[in-house]
Length: 114
Length: 108
Image (cartoon, rainbow over the protein chains, first blue to last red):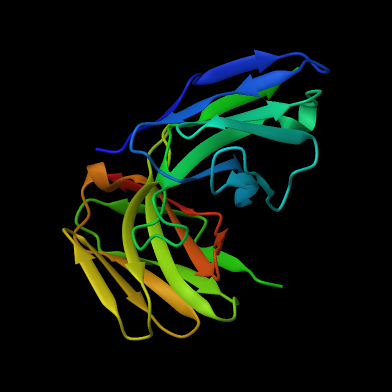
Protein backbone atom coordinates (compact mmCIF):
# COMPACT_ATOMS: atom_id res chain seq x y z
CA UNK A 1 0.00 0.00 0.00
CA UNK A 2 1.05 3.53 -0.72
CA UNK A 3 1.82 5.35 2.43
CA UNK A 4 1.88 9.05 3.10
CA UNK A 5 3.33 9.75 6.50
CA UNK A 6 3.02 13.00 8.35
CA UNK A 7 5.55 13.31 11.11
CA UNK A 8 3.30 14.75 13.81
CA UNK A 9 -0.32 13.98 14.66
CA UNK A 10 -0.68 16.91 17.05
CA UNK A 11 1.33 20.11 17.43
CA UNK A 12 0.93 23.09 19.71
CA UNK A 13 2.94 26.19 18.80
CA UNK A 14 3.10 29.76 19.96
CA UNK A 15 2.18 32.78 17.87
CA UNK A 16 5.17 33.98 15.88
CA UNK A 17 7.01 30.66 15.88
CA UNK A 18 8.33 29.16 12.66
CA UNK A 19 6.63 25.81 12.18
CA UNK A 20 7.65 22.89 9.97
CA UNK A 21 5.21 20.19 8.94
CA UNK A 22 6.83 17.19 7.31
CA UNK A 23 5.36 14.73 4.83
CA UNK A 24 6.98 11.65 3.33
CA UNK A 25 5.58 9.25 0.73
CA UNK A 26 7.06 5.87 -0.09
CA UNK A 27 5.75 5.10 -3.59
CA UNK A 28 7.87 7.32 -5.83
CA UNK A 29 4.97 9.68 -6.54
CA UNK A 30 5.77 12.73 -8.62
CA UNK A 31 3.03 14.94 -7.22
CA UNK A 32 2.54 16.14 -3.67
CA UNK A 33 0.04 18.51 -2.10
CA UNK A 34 -0.68 20.35 1.12
CA UNK A 35 -4.25 21.05 2.19
CA UNK A 36 -5.83 22.51 5.27
CA UNK A 37 -9.19 21.31 6.50
CA UNK A 38 -11.52 23.47 8.55
CA UNK A 39 -15.08 22.66 9.65
CA UNK A 40 -17.64 23.71 7.06
CA UNK A 41 -15.02 24.79 4.52
CA UNK A 42 -13.79 21.55 3.02
CA UNK A 43 -10.19 20.97 2.04
CA UNK A 44 -8.36 23.99 0.67
CA UNK A 45 -5.17 23.71 -1.34
CA UNK A 46 -2.19 25.59 0.07
CA UNK A 47 0.72 24.53 -2.16
CA UNK A 48 1.57 21.70 -4.50
CA UNK A 49 4.58 20.30 -6.29
CA UNK A 50 4.82 18.29 -9.50
CA UNK A 51 8.54 17.62 -9.22
CA UNK A 52 11.57 17.98 -7.02
CA UNK A 53 12.44 21.62 -6.34
CA UNK A 54 9.24 22.69 -8.05
CA UNK A 55 6.37 24.35 -6.20
CA UNK A 56 3.16 26.08 -7.14
CA UNK A 57 0.78 28.19 -5.09
CA UNK A 58 -2.64 26.79 -4.40
CA UNK A 59 -5.73 28.70 -3.38
CA UNK A 60 -4.56 29.94 0.04
CA UNK A 61 -0.74 30.25 0.06
CA UNK A 62 -0.48 33.39 2.19
CA UNK A 63 1.55 32.84 5.35
CA UNK A 64 2.95 29.52 4.11
CA UNK A 65 5.90 28.29 2.11
CA UNK A 66 7.05 24.82 1.05
CA UNK A 67 10.21 22.90 0.34
CA UNK A 68 10.76 19.86 -1.82
CA UNK A 69 14.42 18.94 -1.88
CA UNK A 70 13.79 15.22 -2.39
CA UNK A 71 11.09 13.46 -4.37
CA UNK A 72 9.62 11.67 -1.37
CA UNK A 73 9.52 14.61 1.04
CA UNK A 74 7.36 17.73 0.94
CA UNK A 75 7.54 20.18 3.82
CA UNK A 76 5.08 22.91 4.72
CA UNK A 77 6.48 25.92 6.55
CA UNK A 78 4.55 28.46 8.53
CA UNK A 79 6.92 31.41 8.55
CA UNK A 80 5.35 33.10 11.59
CA UNK A 81 2.49 31.10 13.03
CA UNK A 82 -0.75 32.90 13.77
CA UNK A 83 -3.89 31.78 15.56
CA UNK A 84 -5.86 31.72 12.29
CA UNK A 85 -3.54 28.97 11.10
CA UNK A 86 -4.93 26.62 13.73
CA UNK A 87 -6.27 23.81 11.58
CA UNK A 88 -5.92 20.21 10.40
CA UNK A 89 -3.20 19.96 7.77
CA UNK A 90 -3.32 17.13 5.26
CA UNK A 91 -0.57 16.04 2.91
CA UNK A 92 -1.42 14.06 -0.23
CA UNK A 93 0.42 12.50 -3.13
CA UNK A 94 -0.34 10.97 -6.52
CA UNK A 95 1.52 9.30 -9.34
CA UNK A 96 -0.33 11.23 -12.04
CA UNK A 97 -1.43 14.88 -12.08
CA UNK A 98 -5.01 13.80 -12.80
CA UNK A 99 -5.27 10.43 -11.08
CA UNK A 100 -8.36 8.34 -11.75
CA UNK A 101 -8.36 7.09 -8.16
CA UNK A 102 -7.77 10.43 -6.52
CA UNK A 103 -4.99 11.27 -4.10
CA UNK A 104 -3.50 9.27 -1.26
CA UNK A 105 -3.70 11.27 1.93
CA UNK A 106 -1.72 11.18 5.13
CA UNK A 107 -3.42 11.00 8.51
CA UNK A 108 -3.08 14.72 9.09
CA UNK A 109 -1.44 17.03 11.58
CA UNK A 110 -3.70 18.93 13.91
CA UNK A 111 -1.94 22.22 14.60
CA UNK A 112 -2.98 24.54 17.39
CA UNK A 113 -1.40 28.01 17.54
CA UNK A 114 -1.76 29.72 20.91
CA UNK B 1 -17.53 30.72 -8.92
CA UNK B 2 -16.80 27.03 -8.88
CA UNK B 3 -18.48 25.48 -5.92
CA UNK B 4 -19.22 22.13 -4.33
CA UNK B 5 -21.86 21.78 -1.62
CA UNK B 6 -22.93 18.73 0.34
CA UNK B 7 -26.11 17.96 2.19
CA UNK B 8 -27.05 17.23 4.80
CA UNK B 9 -24.25 18.54 6.99
CA UNK B 10 -24.84 15.67 9.43
CA UNK B 11 -27.02 12.58 9.29
CA UNK B 12 -27.97 10.10 11.99
CA UNK B 13 -29.33 6.73 10.91
CA UNK B 14 -30.36 3.61 12.72
CA UNK B 15 -28.54 0.48 11.67
CA UNK B 16 -30.29 -0.86 8.57
CA UNK B 17 -31.96 2.46 7.70
CA UNK B 18 -31.01 3.30 4.11
CA UNK B 19 -30.47 6.88 2.98
CA UNK B 20 -28.62 9.12 0.51
CA UNK B 21 -26.03 11.87 0.73
CA UNK B 22 -25.97 14.66 -1.83
CA UNK B 23 -23.10 16.47 -3.54
CA UNK B 24 -24.03 19.40 -5.80
CA UNK B 25 -21.55 21.26 -7.98
CA UNK B 26 -21.43 24.29 -10.21
CA UNK B 27 -18.04 23.56 -11.76
CA UNK B 28 -17.99 23.82 -15.53
CA UNK B 29 -15.98 21.32 -17.50
CA UNK B 30 -16.24 18.46 -15.03
CA UNK B 31 -13.31 16.06 -15.34
CA UNK B 32 -14.41 13.69 -12.60
CA UNK B 33 -16.31 13.57 -9.33
CA UNK B 34 -14.62 11.79 -6.44
CA UNK B 35 -16.05 10.39 -3.21
CA UNK B 36 -13.86 9.91 -0.14
CA UNK B 37 -14.48 8.53 3.32
CA UNK B 38 -12.77 10.17 6.29
CA UNK B 39 -12.64 8.59 9.73
CA UNK B 40 -11.97 10.77 12.79
CA UNK B 41 -8.30 11.66 13.12
CA UNK B 42 -7.43 10.24 9.71
CA UNK B 43 -6.99 11.48 6.19
CA UNK B 44 -9.61 10.95 3.46
CA UNK B 45 -9.66 7.53 1.84
CA UNK B 46 -10.69 7.19 -1.81
CA UNK B 47 -13.99 5.44 -2.59
CA UNK B 48 -15.18 6.18 -6.15
CA UNK B 49 -14.64 8.27 -9.25
CA UNK B 50 -17.51 9.10 -11.61
CA UNK B 51 -16.97 10.76 -14.98
CA UNK B 52 -20.24 11.12 -16.84
CA UNK B 53 -23.94 11.58 -16.15
CA UNK B 54 -25.67 8.26 -15.67
CA UNK B 55 -22.57 6.51 -14.39
CA UNK B 56 -22.86 4.40 -11.22
CA UNK B 57 -20.27 2.73 -9.02
CA UNK B 58 -20.84 0.30 -6.15
CA UNK B 59 -18.81 -0.95 -3.22
CA UNK B 60 -20.40 -3.08 -0.52
CA UNK B 61 -23.28 -1.02 0.93
CA UNK B 62 -22.37 2.14 -1.00
CA UNK B 63 -23.51 3.19 -4.45
CA UNK B 64 -22.54 6.46 -6.09
CA UNK B 65 -24.47 8.01 -8.97
CA UNK B 66 -23.90 11.09 -11.08
CA UNK B 67 -26.11 13.57 -12.94
CA UNK B 68 -25.11 16.76 -14.72
CA UNK B 69 -25.38 18.84 -11.55
CA UNK B 70 -25.09 16.47 -8.61
CA UNK B 71 -24.01 13.15 -7.26
CA UNK B 72 -25.63 10.91 -4.70
CA UNK B 73 -24.02 8.45 -2.36
CA UNK B 74 -26.63 5.86 -1.48
CA UNK B 75 -26.09 3.81 1.65
CA UNK B 76 -28.10 0.62 1.83
CA UNK B 77 -28.70 -1.07 5.20
CA UNK B 78 -25.84 0.79 6.88
CA UNK B 79 -23.85 -0.61 9.78
CA UNK B 80 -22.18 1.28 12.64
CA UNK B 81 -18.81 0.85 10.91
CA UNK B 82 -20.09 3.04 8.06
CA UNK B 83 -20.00 6.00 10.45
CA UNK B 84 -17.59 8.55 9.02
CA UNK B 85 -17.47 11.85 7.19
CA UNK B 86 -18.05 11.49 3.45
CA UNK B 87 -16.38 14.05 1.20
CA UNK B 88 -16.94 14.70 -2.44
CA UNK B 89 -14.49 16.50 -4.71
CA UNK B 90 -14.84 17.73 -8.25
CA UNK B 91 -11.98 17.92 -10.71
CA UNK B 92 -11.83 20.45 -13.51
CA UNK B 93 -8.63 20.62 -15.47
CA UNK B 94 -5.98 19.61 -12.96
CA UNK B 95 -7.66 21.32 -10.01
CA UNK B 96 -9.93 19.89 -7.34
CA UNK B 97 -12.67 21.55 -5.35
CA UNK B 98 -13.72 19.71 -2.22
CA UNK B 99 -17.08 19.89 -0.54
CA UNK B 100 -17.36 20.38 3.23
CA UNK B 101 -18.51 16.81 3.84
CA UNK B 102 -21.44 15.00 5.43
CA UNK B 103 -20.91 13.53 8.88
CA UNK B 104 -22.73 10.20 9.04
CA UNK B 105 -23.50 8.43 12.30
CA UNK B 106 -25.05 4.96 12.23
CA UNK B 107 -26.47 3.89 15.55
CA UNK B 108 -26.69 0.20 16.53
